[in-house]
Image (cartoon, rainbow, N blue to C red; front, side, top):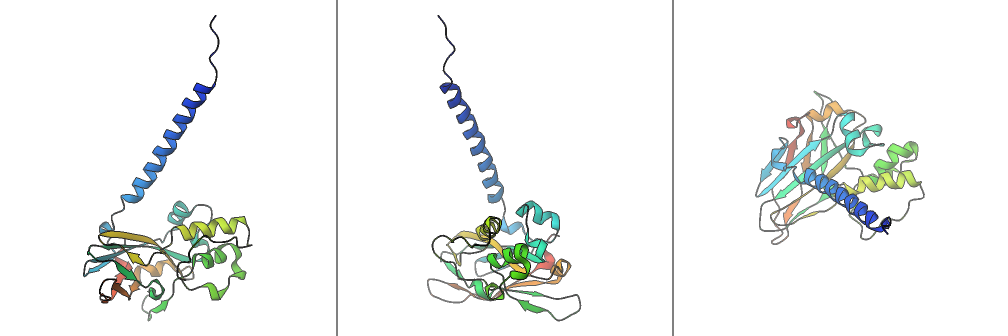
Length: 224
């Protein structure tokens, strides 16, 4: 007598199909990220075997596409995606704390502003008046995980997202690339970014400790 076969094989097939779909989706996402060629970005500076390019986010739609529900744009913070491509045989070290954005209204003298920590950006977006000015500067990367903040689940998730895509590694391996976002409080003056410049003044070889020449990227050359 024939019987209806047990559901386990069907479940296994279903799980296999779902696993395949998830793997395919993750592969597509990874491939899309991997396809970004820093050499294709027009805002750049290159010498001594290091290419530095910058992709500034200006429109609200682009922030929404990248960050989702909450974005730095809400608080007037600019997110600049910075790429480093090291074409040398030596590891290079970048002092992230000395990176500066030179920005001003058209025709006025430019001022240098410091990068913000991802946590401070989360404060500006979600806590606003409770943002702590002492946490504005970009800190050195800390080992281990980040404890819960006590600021709520939404803040923890948003801050974790900002950290995960921030430029955090100060070492670029030989013949390799590093990239991530650097955040600046520009008081919603996104139009000024077209006349601004990003300075990366302190880059050195980790083999002989020789400093590379000053890097400065004109963001006016970027596609807006």
